[in-house]
Length: 280
Image (cartoon, rainbow, N blue to C red):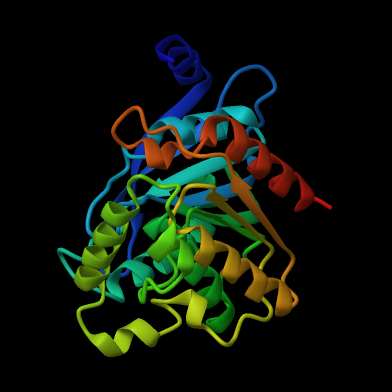
C-alpha cells in the first residue's frame, strides 16, 4: 500500500488553507489532481466533511481516500474542511459551519482552482450527516446551488432505532459501534428536543423534495446501513434522483478499518459514476 500511496501523493497537489466557518476560520485542505492534462480550473468541486461522531476527527482522517478521489479525475477539486466539534460547541455549530464552508467556496472559486460549474457536498459518518444537512440548508436558504450529495456510511438517526443498529450479527463490532454512536449523539445533541430537528436527524425530515441528486453508500456489515438505505428510499419517494449502494464488508485488520469501507475500490468507482452522471 505504501508504494501505491507514494505514487498517489506524487500525482496530487495538496494545499493547506483556511476557509470561513460560521463563527471564524477553519482549517481546510485542497486536493488537486496534477500531471499532464490537468486543467487550470476544475469544473467540479467536492466539499468533504470528516467522520468522528461529531466529537472527534480532523483533516488527516480521510487524507488517503481524498488523495485517491482527486487523483482519479483531474477535472475535479476536493476541499476537505474541519468543523466545530461537539466537545467545543454542540449542535447546531457543526452544521452551521458546514453550510458556511460551502458558501465560502462559492465566493473563493479562484483560490480553489474551480470554475464554479458544479458543487457537490460529501462526507463519511458524522460528516455525511453534515453533507445531507448542507443539502437541506442550501434548499431552505436558497444558497448555494448544489449539484449533488455523496453520503458514505451516514449517521442519520440519533434514536439508533434501526434493525441493523440493534441486531446486526454479521458485525463483530456492532455493540461497540452502537455505544460509540450513542455517546457521540449525547455530546452532539445534549438537548433532547434537538434530536427531532431535521438538521440534526435528516432521516426524520418530512420535507425532502427539491434536493440535489444523492449517492448513498453503506457497507454490508455496517450497523449504519439501514438508516442509510431508509434515507435513500425517502429521497426517492420525494422525487430526488438517488443511487443507493451497499458495499462489501469493511477491512478490519487495522485500526480505523471501518472508514476504509472498501473505499479504494468500490466507493471510488461509485463516486466516479455518480459525478459523471451529473454532467448529463
